[in-house]
Image 1 (cartoon, rainbow, N blue to C red):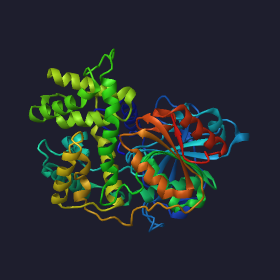
Image 2 (spheres, one colour; image 1 turned 180 degrees about the vertical axis):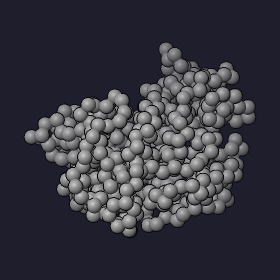
Image 3 (tube, rainbow, N blue to C red; image 1 turned 120 degrees about the horizontal axis):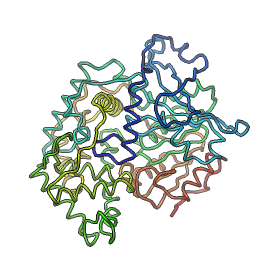
Image 4 (cartoon, rainbow, N blue to C red; image 1 turned 90 degrees about the vertical axis):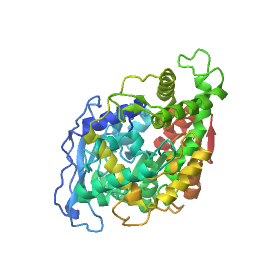
Amino acid sequence: MPESRQALPMKQIKRTAALVAASVVLLGLTVPLSASAAAAGPLTWTKCEGTGLDPRQRCATVDVPMDYSDPDGRTIRIAVSRIPSEKPAARRGALLLVPGGPGGDSLSDPSEKGRQLPRSVRDAYDLIGFAPRGNSPSTPVSCDIDHSDLARTKLLPWPSAGGSVAGNMAVARRISDACARDGDELLRHISTKNNARDIDRIRAALGERKLSAWGVSYGTYVGAAYLEMFPRRTDRIVLDSNDHPDPVRAQRAWLAAFEVGVEDNFPEFAKWASRPGNPYRLARTAAEVRPLFLRLAARLDRAPIPWPGANPEELNGNVLRQTMLDGFYDPADGYPAVAKLMLAAKKGTVPPAGQAPPDSVLRNYAAVVATTVCNDAAWPRSAAVYRKDVAAGRSKYPLTAGMPRNAMVCAAWPWQPKEPPVRVTDRGPSDVLLIQNERDVATPLGGALKLREALGRRAVMVTNDATGHGAYLDNGTACGDALVSRFLATGERPRKDTYCR
């Protein structure tokens, strides 16, 4: 889910760079308007900030209630972007591009994804992006988190080398205290359900009776929430790289998904890393790669290598594990990044530290992740729960060393959820197409099948014989791409669940 990291694959670096650029745009101002005023009037489209955008893309803001239980109270602004249909006579409506994360935005997606979408889809829709509540340049949130706690291996809860969770519980308390001490009231009102409510406000502001959407990763959970809460407002819905339908309850299923996702992907990495002629070849056979990785991680646990300019300033076992997890999102860029770090570690060296986003951007990102996950559902608060779960995870899934069962900031979060989590059902129109890669590190096939089951007759699912996160027009198959494009352009879905090689 979260998609900002230190040892980033190239695609994530570009996404994070877009967040950095967006952070200087002062659109996230709070204006005390009534709820009726927030929903009224046409949008004012102006030039978007940023580089590399399609010149036709324009940006605006939509005012929404901060607290939907107090619709006449304070409002916040949601930044939106649009590229109009390229053929008005063929226009069907608006296609909302729902970002992953939490912590991601899709403001540049009308330009970036618009270049990939076939002409038939660009003709049928205005392409709409947005920055979900809390994400700059929408009205932003932030917590004064220490620089060291912004490390990727802290934001995802890697236990200590020996498996202790004490450090993770301490990080959870520090971040929670920072949010409670200096965070804005908006922190209490960021959740998946409120993201879905904001989407319906965007729909209304666009003047659309119904909305089509393409949600990716966490965006599939937001999309499922919208399907559940506003079923009669949906047109054609594509859910891509699908979350377990209940990812934030006490069992913390979305985080636990990394255990299975890494295991699903590692054999593909091992085959690649042992291939003759590969300039980053790690071993003669695929069978040798896994033990090599585990040995290197264990050695770095015992004797980290100094890494000036990185955060943390050392290459330790958890940094190597996190690099592996990140690299599996996108094999084309990620596999070489993992192999190069392993080769450097074997020699006792490190590559130059990459340039990280400014701390202000990471604080905004971390605050949005924390508020969304912790406000959606309560997590266990006892260290004993995490000690037991981490020990079991380290034994069964050594590649991920217990991280997916560990304590995030939610273990010390100062506020309780305001409403129950989303419960996905099969009630509503049959207008959903799921697209899923068979080997996805962040949203494994098993979780996607649970979402497919929960949606029942509402959905049809296309499974790609493919590796990586992001199926449609990304790491999927030509067959899957064609089926999704046809559905968006014409409404025609496969008659039954389909497997694409």
